[in-house]
Each structure stands twice: as C-alpha cells, then as structure tokens.
Length: 189
Image (cartoon, rainbow, N blue to C red):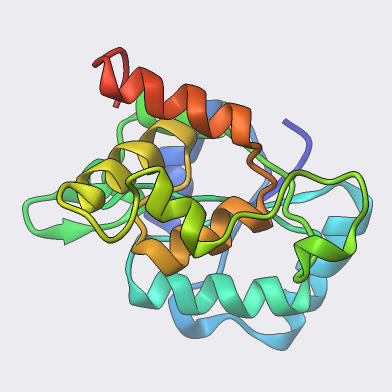
C-alpha cells in the first residue's frame, strides 16, 4: 500500500501495521493535529494518496472533518463501534487484524462536497431513497444501517450520516441493493 494512513494514536498505528505490514502511518495525537501535520497530509495526498481512519466516536469525527476540509482528496475508512469496541473502550486500536484488512478492502475515493456537480458519477441518494430501502423511518432501520455500514465499510451511521457517506463515497444503487439483499438473506452483516 503506497498511501499515507492517518490515525489518531500510536496504538492505532501498531494495529494497522500488524494487519497490513510495513505501511506509512501518521498519527495525529488525537486533537493534537497541527497545521503543519495538515500541510504534510495535503502534500502526501498529492504525492501518494491519503487514507484516514479515525475512531468511530465524536472526537474521531471531528478530526476526520478537519482533515476532510483541508484535504478533500483524502480517502476515508469507517470502522463500526462494534468492531472498535473492547471492554467499554472504543478505538481503532481494539479492532482485529482481520477487521482492519476487511475494512481496507472497502476503500473508496471520496467525491467532492456536491455529488450532483460531477457528471458521470454515481447516483445521488436522498432521504426518500433511504425510506424506500428501509434504512430510515421504519422499524429495524437502525439495525439495517448498522449491517449495511459493516458490509460496505461505511461504519455506524444515523440516516443523515449514512446519506452523506453514500453520496460522498459514490456508492451506486446496484451495489446498495446487492448489499441489502445479502444482509436480508443472512449472507453477510
């Protein structure tokens, strides 16, 4: 893997290396992400590409959002809270090497902030689409979103966040329908 992988801490970096081998990793020291580090990440995005994997919690989302604003070309991976949880602690460092490898298999390139502005890109999903797929506004929607997030490597998400990730990461309708079909029939979750 040639991309720079950005994580929050040293323990996260160790887990990633156990799963993927000798890869280039930068850790942010949590909220200690400096402007100099953001500049380095932006340069790495142009030079070799960047993959962001933060903890599936509020702090991780704030760090991810800061990187997304500074480096829109960065790729993002989302770990579910279940996969990142251990003894009440949530973090990348708790994920198994198998889960990390599975997650990296779902790597996607983020699209711009306005998915409708790029001709030829995947369809744009709306709230009515989530309602139609049973991912919002009905009994079991939260569980279906959790299973879908795990299946497609989108992490845990409420309806609004799922909608943003589907559009930002360019998931197509056929891929979404296939994943939901597999979830319904218990093939993967």
